[in-house]
Length: 224
Image (cartoon, rainbow, N blue to C red; front, side):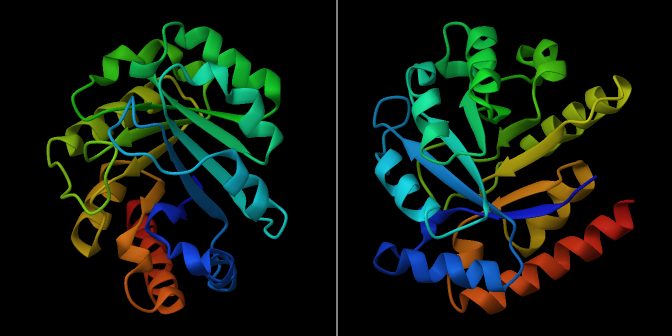
């Protein structure tokens, strides 16, 4: 199981975005989490293809693009063309989730599906063989800085049990409310891809990143 810290640029200083991405690279980060929000599926609006295309020119990081948008299948090819290595779509946002998954695969990207805190794991369990990653939102999608929803720990454990039972190679990603305390909680529950925003970007970016990556390494070593 590969454990990765996935810093979310939603918490970055956009006046210094390129500089901060370079700092993440120096600190050993491999994945960059990119939240795209449309103001419809979630209340907030973030950024889209022009930003991704721009930073793609200067970065070799794995671009983990999370589409919090209504009917994401409309944009899948465009996001892959502008630099997405993985595209994660919300089960709740798709009329035909199976078709949307196939569109991502056909575009040549890794496939992720995400569920909100209130959506049962069982709603997406029959798609596990078709995806690379399942993202469990541990806060309500759309805003940074929220507190981790404790009930989501059981969902992570349930998903991990299903994946292990079927002997699948599927990443479990979590996003929302990650800090020193919840980091250990989600990894021990079964998560291996950790999205973090303010936890990474608040304060000294490089120092924070190195410290968090070290904690992930230590905790995951205890799990394995």
